[in-house]
Length: 140
Image (cartoon, rainbow, N blue to C red; front, top):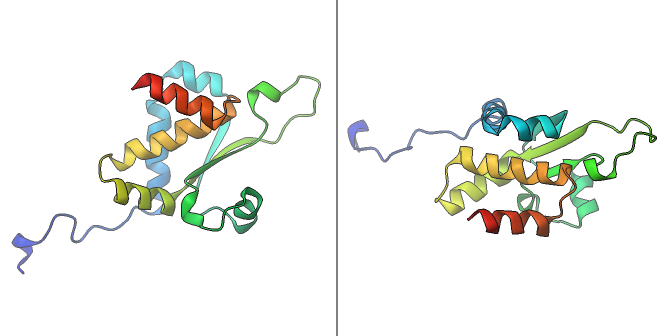
């Protein structure tokens, strides 16, 4: 097969951790300013997979099942009299997100990253998975 007859993406490679982090940063910047400012200081971290102890704590055996995770004290449970909580972090797991993106085939990678990011920030606001799913259903 000559190069002019190659399948689209035949030479494409998966985005590196750095490029994935850039896409996540762009997704963050594209969110409404009010949403970002209400979120406060949330650190966004990109890893290939969740660490083994995280998966074990969540009762998950397959690392591909977890696309993102919020870590920290959510805004509903913070108190001015409590010691300063550790920084809130949103973890995005590159490999599981890439797998979901490839399996779905109906969404751009940037949109899927934004979806996972918004979902995890929902936990930062103190929302449960059910709360977030209800909001998403109402938005459709």
